[in-house]
Length: 225
Image 1 (cartoon, rainbow, N blue to C red):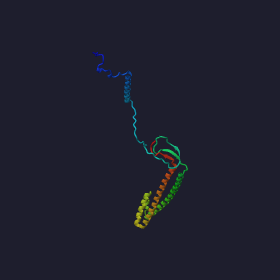
Image 2: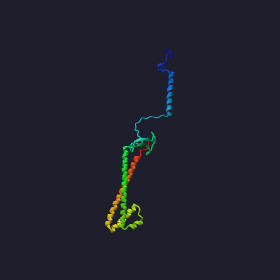
Image 3: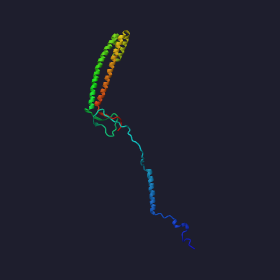
Image 4: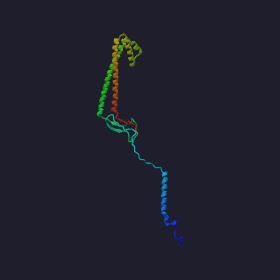
C-alpha cells in the first residue's frame, strides 16, 4: 500500500502552477505603471498647442495698387520706411522732374493756354462794350432811360431784365426795330457767355498743368503698412 502522502495528488500537479515572479519583473511593472500614471497626470495639467493641417489662401486686406507719377523724373527722396503705417493722401516719395520731354511739352501747353486766356479776355472786353452800347440804344428807343436810371440797375441779371422789358415795350410801338434789336442783343449775349466759359475752361486747364509742373510728390492711394 502506497503512502498517501508520498506523491502529489492529481489535482496538485507541479506543472500546473505558474512560475514564481522575479523581483526585477515586479520592479519593472511598478515603474511602467508609475510612468503611465505620471503621463496621465501631466496631460491633464500641462497646456499644449494643437497643430492642425488645413489648406487655405492668404490674401491682403487691400488689393495691390500701381502708383504712377504724373511726370517723368528721378526719385529724390523716400519719406516712409518698411512696415510703417501710412494714410491715404500721405506723400511717400518726391521726384526730381528736371527738363524732361514731358515737362517741356507741359510748358509749351502752358504758354498756349495763357495766350488763349489773354485773347479771349480781349474779345470779351470788346463784346461787353458792344453789349453796353446796344443796351443804351434799346433803352433810348423804348424811352426807358428815366425808369432804368431811377431803379439803379447795376448787376447783369437786372440789366438783362430791364432790356427785356424795354424790348417788349418797343415791340408795341415799333415791332420791326424791336425784332432787329432783340436779335442783335441775343447774339451779343451768346458771344459773351461763350467767351466767359472758354476763359473758365482755359483757366482750369492751366491749374492742372501747373500742378503737374510743380508737384513731384507721390501720394499713397489707401491706408495700410
